[in-house]
Image 1 (spheres, rainbow, N blue to C red):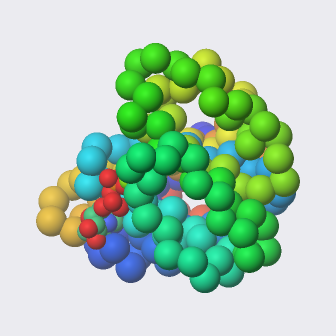
Image 2 (image 1 turned 180 degrees about the vertical axis):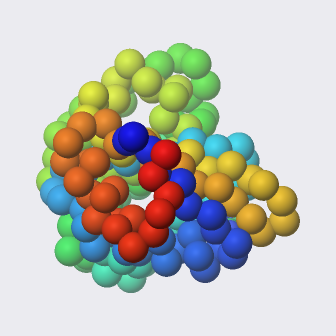
Length: 158
Ligand code: ADP
Ligand code: MG
């Protein structure tokens, strides 16, 4: 009931969906991104940045766990916690979650105990070639409302 499934057949589809989502986000929104390496988590984040009006190129923060992008309608905090492994290190994530900006966390399960209860979980599954299945799971009313708006013209709630 709180899940919405989107089929992407191109990197551009994924980017466009993320850009549309960006237009609906509210200050302080938290998004998690799960999926294997190469699934499209960073591609999604790039689309999100574009939708927020951020001009700088977003890339995978290999050595930096948190990158901040300003210049858009809201700041974007891009986290890739892959490198943390299972240590659940606390790098002051909460300050970002509670901040004005949009937080996107790749590999969020690695810091699951530190995530806010209300958030939008996004899972990307590689189907074949350029096809991806993207599932949105809303945790909390405001995210549910947002998903309903994002998918209002499609019949893909699960
Ligand atoms: P991750 O951050 O999950 O490791 P990336 O976004 O860095 O993944 O890489 C995904 C790769 O897959 C990119 O090279 C992208 O162009 C490609 N790709 C192919 N089809 C899609 C699709 N439908 N959605 C997203 N990425 C796709
Ligand atoms: Mg990535």
